[in-house]
Structures are given as C-alpha cells and as structure tokens.
Image (cartoon, helix red, strand yellow):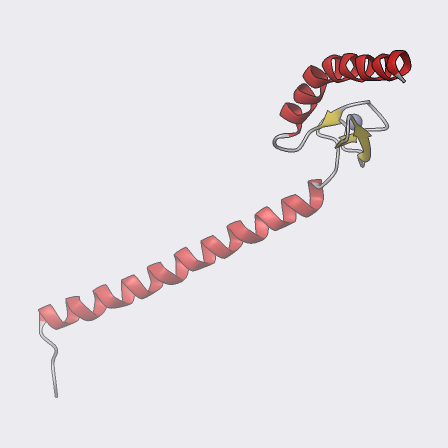
Amino acid sequence: MYQPSEKEQEYFLRQEMERLKAIREERARRQAEEERARLKELHYLHCAKCGQTMETTKVAEVEIEVCPDCGGVYLDAGELEKLVDAHKRGPFANALGLVRRLWGEVNG
Ligand SMILES: [Zn+2]
C-alpha cells in the first residue's frame, strides 16, 4: 500500500488548511457585508439621538434631514459646505440684486 512521505503529507495538509482559511475569510467578508446592509436598513434616515424617522426639508436649496421629534439635523457629506457657501453668498447676492433693481428703477 502506498504510504505518502512526510513531505507529501505536509503539502496536502497545508493545501487543506489554506482552503479552509479561504472559506473562513470569504464567510467573514460576506457576514460583514450583510451586517453593514442590515445596519444601513435599520438606521437609514433615523435620528442619531432619538431614533425617530427624519423628514427631508430644503434650506438654501440644500435638502437636509430634520428630526420632527427632537429637531436634530442631519447633513450629507458636502452639505455643510454648501450651506456655508450659500450663507456667504447670501448677503452679497441680495445686495447685488438690490443694486440691479434700484439701477433699473432709476434708469428705467
Ligand atoms: Zn431626534
């Protein structure tokens, strides 16, 4: 009867260990993905403080989420910058609009 050498046995054992390791890693990756999806579904558009469903509203042309229960506000990535920009532009844009309107009235 054929008896594998110690080296052959080690080779096959190592292969088997690597196969099991790949299965374990794939399973962990899939579970992490499922957990992320589960958490997203559970928390999507819910207030970070009180857990209630948030409502979308518009402030300076930017859609933001507001919690009707506690008044908390959620901003997506980049929305704070948009609001700050709109605030910076606001008074200047208004002043420019006033100048144009008065110019039109005076010269019209
Ligand atoms: Zn809330």
